[in-house]
Length: 214
Image (tube, rainbow, N blue to C red):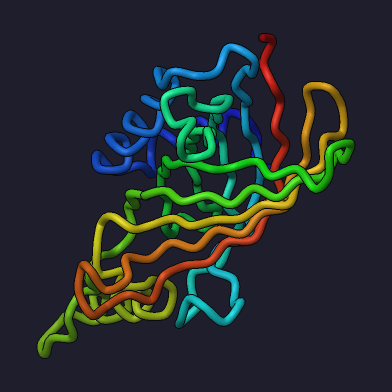
């Protein structure tokens, strides 16, 4: 387990300026108008990073992502679209690979009027601090630089764009009045809108959602 001190140091040491801007944008969802009937939720979870589920290609980054975020209650201003929740979170990789911040909308679909189970599809956008393009192969490099680039080619991906779409789906269980547990899948890619390089990345994880007081 990573200690709280090491987790805080990771936040300070590994996030690029672009990722910090993304976090500020994600945090801005706290100001979205919500329904008075539902409070927001604190989200905390872990996810396997760059897993092979047959969608993203060239799965080479690996590691575990620690995630922390916030999700509003139903957004009153979007009632005509099914009153989705708005969410934002940060995701930090244990192997110092690609970190990202994401924000978007999701819908809670209960599996029956008395059920404690629900499905939660969502769609968002993400900004990451990974490689947009990998360093080119060049002649005449020093041995140390050749070794450094070989490690990059082995463990990192050229995402092709700094910004990506972030569709997701979760299956949740309302374990208590304020506590829910969710298993989720998320995919990050840019649909080749940012160029031909679009390997994408898939995440599978578990998270806890704690609902704040109304």
